[in-house]
Amino acid sequence: MRKLQAVFGLTRPLILFGMLLVYFLGTAIAIGSGYEINMLAIVWGLVATAFCGASVNIMNEYADHETDALTTKTRYSGGSGVLPKGMVTRQFAFIAGWVSAGIGLGILLLGIVLGVTNWMAFFWLVIGTGGGWMYSLPPLRLAWNGFAEVANGFIGGIVLPIFGYAVLAGAEGDYLRVLLACLPYGLLVTTTAMATTYPDRVADKQVGKRTLATWMSSAGLRRVYLVVTLLAIVVLLVLLWTWILPPQVFATSLVILPALVMAYRAYTHDSNPHATARAAMMLAFAQTSAWLWLGWFY
Image (cartoon, rainbow, N blue to C red; front, side):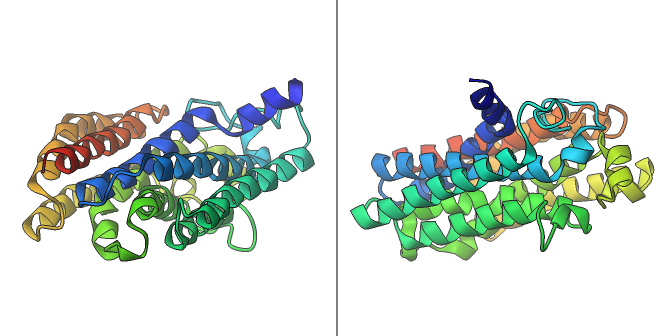
C-alpha cells in the first residue's frame, strides 16, 4: 500500500489531470473541424494519455530528486516529495516510469490492432512521451541545457493537443493548421514553465540545471514573460485574420485577458506559480468549449 501511495504521488495527479484536459483540447479541435465523434477512440486515447503522462511525470521526479530535496513545494513546482522522503527508491521510480509508458503505448497499439485508434495518433504519442522523458533524462536533458521553457511549451502545449486531434483525425488531418491553432496555448505553457521554475531557481542552480530563472534577473524574466504573453495575443489575432482560428474560438479566448494581467503582476513577486498556471488552463478550457460548440452546432 505504501508503494501504491508513492506511485500515485510520483505521477503528480494535479499536473496529470491538466494533461488530460489538454488532450481534450485536441479532440475538441478535431470535433470542431468536422471529424466524427468517436467516444471509444477518445476514451482509448485518454487512457493511453494517462499512463504515458504519468510515466513522464515519474521520470521527471526520478531525474529531479536532488533539486526536489532542496525546494519549497507548491502544487505545481518542487516535485511530489516522494523520493526525498524515501518512500520508494529511485530505482523503483525508474521501473515504474518504464512500466507506465509501456502500458500507455501498448494500449494504443492494441487500439490500432482492433481498429479503434490509428498510427498517426501513435506517432504523436511517441513524440510526446519521448520528448517528456528527454526533458530531464539523457541524452538531451532539455531542462538542464537551457531548453526547459521552450520544451514545456512545445511538448505540453502543442504536441499533446495534436495527439488528441490525431485520435479522431488520423492521417487525414491538417496538422499544420492544428499546430498553428495551438501556438497561443503553447506560448502560455511556456510562461507557465517560467513561473514553475522560478521558485526552484536557487536549488536548480545548485544542482546545475540551467533554466531561465537560474541566470536571469527578476526584471529580465519579467520582460521575457511579458513578451511571450503579448506574442500569444498577437498570434491569436493573426490566426483570426488568416481564418486558421474560427471567430468563435478567438472570442472565447479573450475571456482570459484579466487572468493574464493578474498572472503578469504576480510573476516574480509571488513565488507561487498558480496565477500563471490558471491563466493557461483557462485558455485550454475556453478553447475546448468553443471548438466543441462549433462541432455540435455547425
